[in-house]
Image 1 (spheres, rainbow, N blue to C red):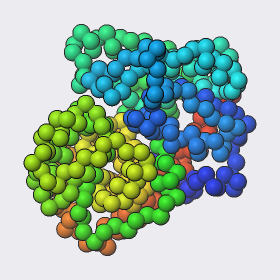
Image 2 (tube, helix red, strand yellow):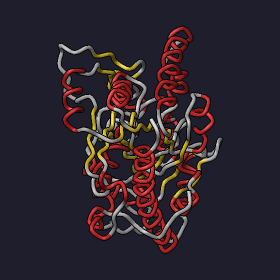
Image 3 (tube, rainbow, N blue to C red):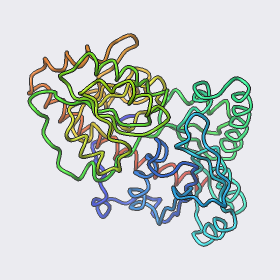
Image 4 (cartoon, rainbow, N blue to C red):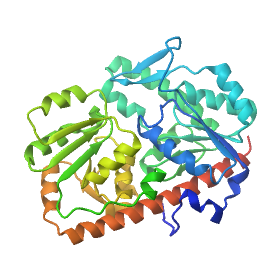
Length: 381
């Protein structure tokens, strides 16, 4: 996780080449684009990988599924669904694309189909392991359902990890997990940024901290009660909440008497970027956060992020200047009051450092992915 001094942006592709430039890469995911952390990760990654490979393609469910297809709502979160893939259509598309490497991202039907097609066609294989589904099951399922679900998840993840050249994680804490699942090689890679978050000029930090932002799934693992408590304790600070999820109605009910809380619903990336630019601090108090991509996005916009100590993003030492750690037992309100006492010069200096660190990690991430794609293509089957 050491940083280089090169920042990758797509317009630089003519200035640098990668040995993976002759390779085609297919990605298989059960996540709809931008609806969760894994979906967002690859939505940001693929456009930049196009510049160092011969082509990339994502195979994933559409957010407009047909009623003739079997869909299953995710327990505890009906806003997300598992969808059975149209195997004949995807098989034809896969054969036409002729990838050299397949990346399976999730242990669902799409991820397993990618593994099967890779074996059938002799492709190199990688696995992207981003979510500890077994840990999430503790929040959503009863003991019986959890045993059944975890049995399936363990089996599916074992199939994927054992069949791949390498399993890629963005948190060192996941390495023991994927090794237990049979990964031949576990490699830590960074997290990419949306290109627009790097290209658009940064809006300067305001002289006073007036608005904070939470953006993400409104779900139990995000510890949103801590955000509500902070809003109640800081009536002179505006709290913007962007996203959707199973706790949306409960949160709206709990904050109906708070004039400083505003719900923005699910936003596309441009809308999210604009709301970030209007805010002075990002909040991410999650109980379970494999990385915390939204904090990196805030840093790219020159905004510091207050992030729970257990989030994987803290493992990247190069990002520490843009992060403020929320330790167990600490109140968000106390952190906000402390930040409001800082001078504008101090806050703007942090903003500049956060921007540089985020862009540097993005550049390293694209290079690391190119390296792993090349190694998977060359690995013995």
